[in-house]
Image 1 (cartoon, rainbow, N blue to C red):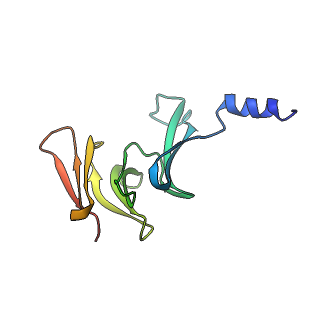
Image 2: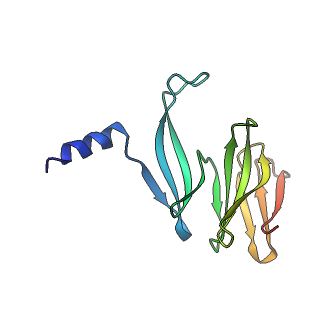
Length: 137
């Protein structure tokens, strides 16, 4: 009973992360990141979303993700701070590896998974702007 006020305080202050469970063992974990003092930021606290496969963190501050129908693959965007651009990354459950598949010039609109053909079409806002990605190297 005496831990209830502490738990309530933590919850109200935002120090407890929340998670959205996805299919096939994937989940998105929301956590606040204090941006006060960071140059060029207009928000004080940023809601960050990290992508996990069970306990393995696949991506940090993910804006877009798409899980394949079988759950074997997940496509997500990842900020590359060194190169100041986003990249599209593909995780394969069978190999437990993440690989870069394309530069993310903008956030994708949708994905068309064709696992039996071994391909993925990533669609952007412009209808004719589609990236074709091979699922296996």
